[in-house]
Amino acid sequence: MLLLRVFALMAAMLLFAGVGHAQAIEPMPFANHAQELRFQHLVRELRCPMCQDETLEDSNAPIARDLRNQVFRLMQQGKSDQEIKQFLVARYSDYILYDPPLKPGTWLLWFGPLLILLGGAGVVLVAIRKRKRHGIEAMTVSDSTDNGEDW
Amino acid sequence: MSRLLPLLGFLALMALFGAGVWWNAYHDPTSIPTPLLNKQAPAFNLPKLYEPTQTVSKADLLGQPYLLNVFASWCIECGVEHPVLEAAAPTLGVKLVGYNYKDAPADAKAWLAAHGSPYALLIADESGRTAIDFGVYGAPESFLIDAKGVIRYKHIGPITPDVMATKVKPAIAAMLKEAP
Image 1 (cartoon, each protein chain N blue to C red):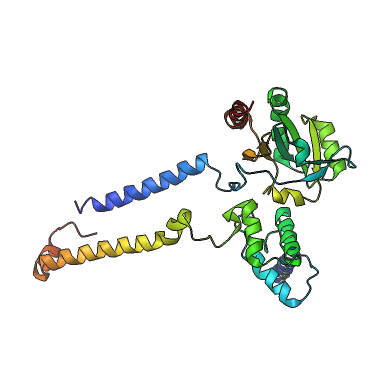
Image 2 (cartoon, rainbow over the protein chains, first blue to last red; image 1 turned 90 degrees about the vertical axis):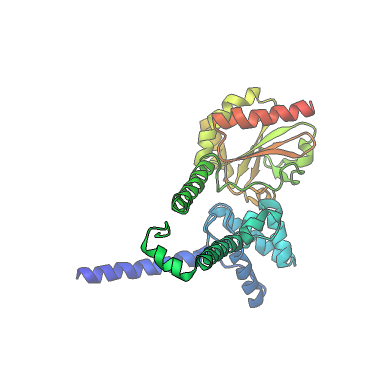
């Protein structure tokens, strides 16, 4: 009986989760299906400035609703995706984009992981060369004693 | 030396962690720097809160600097900021303009009646559409706009007594010194 109640509760929660998502985007008078798909793709690439871990599509914040309406209005005016993004970046900076643009200020962000990878490769290379110089025999001997590499 | 490596690695991670904690203590990672700083404020034309048939445009306000304070009756932090603005308004040195954001005019008027109004002028943006041009994404936000219509300073979040003394007033003083 209890189990049944728990299941009923879970089902209700699932149902309401679905409802919540459906409400995040209120129906808009799209001219055609292609335009609707374009809109949905665009709002998924834009970040809600109020709740920065959500896209404009997901967010229920009033500002996200306003910006979705703004994106819709700009689309009706015949603006391209690039123009719409530029419109928002001019007002809300790059923060509005989920995909940060490549520019001097974001080099570390884009190439940082590569730098760390190269650094790691460097450390491995040095370690291998060191071992080669010491020779395999020396390694086996030193391995039994404490050479400081026991970590 | 190689014996010390793990310790050094650990200390490096500790330093990184400490730097992160320190940075977040003094910076709000969620506040978005406005790209409009030191640029012309966007043009606007909004109705007055108390006389909705009259509108105020950016051009109307040119010629003297003002602090544009974005507020709303539904905004809890605006209540925190309100006494600070009331106390500072007479000695601010610039006109304090209230920008009522996404609010029902009746609610805004009731809120101002209850809390008092430090504003010399009140304009209303009920739809929030003009606010998008200002890059507003919440309330309260404040813009210091000079006599030529350039945004000189922006504060996101409530103006606490500390923010008023260390940020807003120095920004106003610097602006007035430059163009008295």
